[in-house]
Structure formats: C-alpha cells, structure tokens
Length: 278
Figure 1 (tube, rainbow, N blue to C red):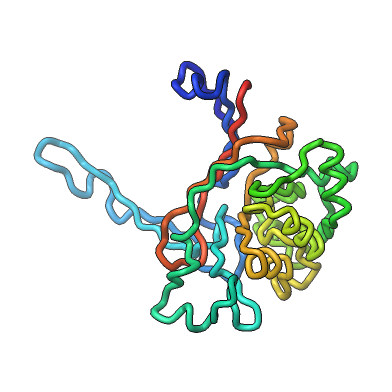
Figure 2 (cartoon, rainbow, N blue to C red):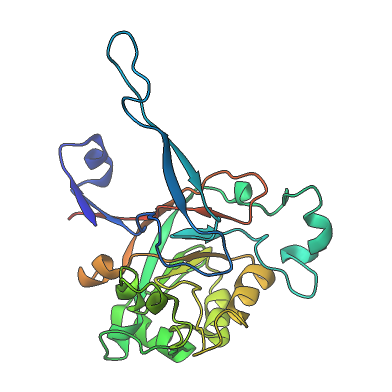
C-alpha cells in the first residue's frame, strides 16, 4: 500500500512529493502466525444501538487480545536469551521477576526514524522469490548490495525481501508458516554479516526473519541469538515488502514507533518507508 502526499507542509521539508509505503500487515482474526504465541482476536463488546443516548447518538467499542509477536511486530531485546543470559549479560530469570522486563522491554525501544535499506535477495540471485527453506547467505546479501548500490551503514534498518510474503494471505495459513516446506530466511552467517555492519534493526517478510528448515519449525533460531542477544539489534517480522520491491525502492526513510508496552517482549507495529521526490 502506498500513499502519495501533495499540498502538505511536509513537502516544504522534503523539497518535493512524498510517497509512503505501508510495510505493515492488517491485523485480522485467523492471520498466519507462529504457534508459539497467543492468536489475535477482536470483538465488539458494544455495538451501535446497544446503548443510545437521549440525543440519538451511539458509540461502539472494541476488545482485542493477542500475543505481542503476532502480525507485523518488533522484537524487544528481552525476547530471547542464551544460556540464561539476555543482551548485556543480565540474568534472564531474574529479569522477569514481577512479570515484566523493566530494562529490555518493548517500552525501551525508542521510536525509529532512520535510513532504511531493502535488500531484494530474489532479484539479486535471478529469481522471482526464494525457494522454501532457502538459506540467505552473506554472499547473497553482498550480491544484493552490489546489484542495488545500497550498502548498509551503521545505524541503518535493513529489510530482507525473500518473496515469501506472497503467502501471507493464502487461505491456508499453514503455507506461510511453512512447517513442512520450510521458510526462506537469513542464515546465522548472514546475521553476523548484518551485525558486522552495526545496523540498528533488521526486518523481513517472513514469520521468523531467519531460515526455518523443512519440518523443523522454530526448533533452532541462531540468527535471533546473534542479533538480539549478542548484538542488541532489533528484529521486525511479517512485513509487507512486495510494493516496495516492485517499485524498485531500495533506500528510504524508515519510520516505526512501537507501542510502549511496559516490560513486554515485543510490540505490534506499523512500519513505513518514506520516499521523497515521488
């Protein structure tokens, strides 16, 4: 989804037109998600007409329940531990006493307004999309950089397109989850390649960012360990990247502000890519 902005005070700042690419997925009941997290649910406890004021006015309201790692979302640094330790070496068990992570929870993720880079891996390797279970290597990432001329720099947000996002709206949500087929994604070595460039955050169009082997599900997530635990790099998952790639946009202003969910391990998000001069 894109939005062209004209006749707006922002134009005076941008020096031209703005095009905004919505990189978030709509939150809907039954959308595909990791089975490790509570599903999204939405209902209307009050509908128009349930209560009507004397002047004829009426209001509806909502009730939502969900895990914080469902739909497009960002992982806080409290999300993953390794050998009982969180990012920075803190004791993972002690950090969760009281039912919240005060030091590394989602409320500690500052709003992100940074240079964004899209690395279109299928285009770089001459394919329309990556095969199921395909492992995205440092060589693939280097090839994408050379093809596009968009080298990630320190502090950037780097988004990895695998093409798997095309399955998000499949009537069979298990297709996107890819339990049997596997899901393409960044390898452990690819995660280290990103960490070496000291990026601020990474994202992908898949359910777990990294490669999921056929039949293995979430049994091993080494890229999460490298990025979250070892280097303090945020991960954004289940992104919508097809419009951005189709437009050939590889460099942009990336904007994301997570919900300040105190002590949570992640937050739903609606990331945006903003391009000037469109």
